[in-house]
Image 1 (cartoon, one colour):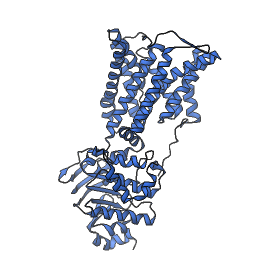
Image 2 (spheres, one colour; image 1 turned 135 degrees about the vertical axis):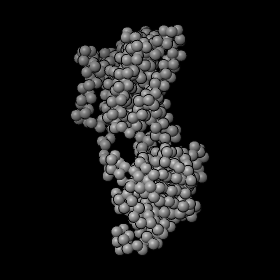
Image 3 (tube, helix red, strand yellow; image 1 turned 180 degrees about the vertical axis):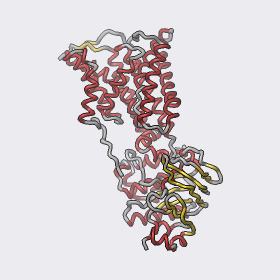
Image 4 (cartoon, helix red, strand yellow; image 1 turned 30 degrees about the vertical axis):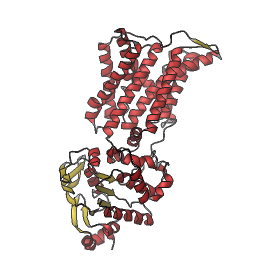
Length: 290
Length: 233
């Protein structure tokens, strides 16, 4: 029982991070049909920038803020200088651009930062809290609470503001959005900015638990992508549920089978989803209406 | 008010508008009739700026607009009700209408929303319902209402009667006529040529990307070729 509780708590913690990465994929996909494979680099940049800015003597909260702001700026720049000039290209070409951007960002991070692993001090110390026989890290609670706040704020923005509704309108029908005067390029730029910010926050939150390095984004992006696929690409609730499910399954696989196979879980899930439910848990099958 | 001169447009290498010239004067209803694939929707998209043109000029109120992005043309006073309605399915009727006023940056929309409800009272019952759950006729009314929320001076209507029950066609056309009396200028694309010619001042016939005929609606209506090809008389 204590074991089960332990796996659930660690599964939910990483799952919350996957959920945030998946939400980043979802936002950009909804606004532009692009799968942004540089999403993982946003996560890496959040963690690495915070590490190096704190090493320079800046207090942690300020360093985290700097990391989020600078990563957001990089997200906007990615759209402006890599995606926007290729406007009109097919989604596949745009996806390849994001893969190129991901490799580029990793390369730059390697030079600007370094090639070592780094950590950050946990916000509320490293002493585990005993709960039902399981040892829960305070940072896990910080991750879960922050993820909840981010998801709620994002939901309120989308559902309660006219700008949020303009995003939904753009996702639902881009032609009509343009015809009523929405500058859809700016909506896509906004989706890159918000996705980058969410990614950076996820990267800062996970670093005290999982360490970070210049290439930490790759695996996180693939797992976040698996989460988005499982939930149904384009569905925000699906991204959250998919992320938590993958985190839990990974934790169970690591606990009951072997931690060597932990990383395989996400890939098995991608295969299983593609073979059996390609539209995902919450996604709708694409129906072409004539 | 609107003058389209020698406009060409293509999808990839296939040119579909081979130099179209037409004009719409302030306060007029001008209809553009033609068969499927003649290029009517392409022309409407070109005027709204969602379809690139490869040649020619488009002027609105004396100003050349072919370089303006689509959203700036809405702000300049051109609104389009697209073919097939294209409402925002997941958003409520109210949100669809509010977004219609997006280009105006105005927060007080009460009077404008009330006016749309006055034109289309049946929308009120669906106020908070997702637009995707509405019937085709209700969606058409919503689409027209949404375009009016931008307070256009030129309204582009693309096939507003398509797929509607006959009594709804009459209702929509009556609304179009009343909008003209309020001073709105209208460019109306229709396959239902008889209905369009009945309310229009002037008409153009578009055939495979070229204007084949133009004139007063009455003259076009009496043209032998039009009667055979589009009116089935």
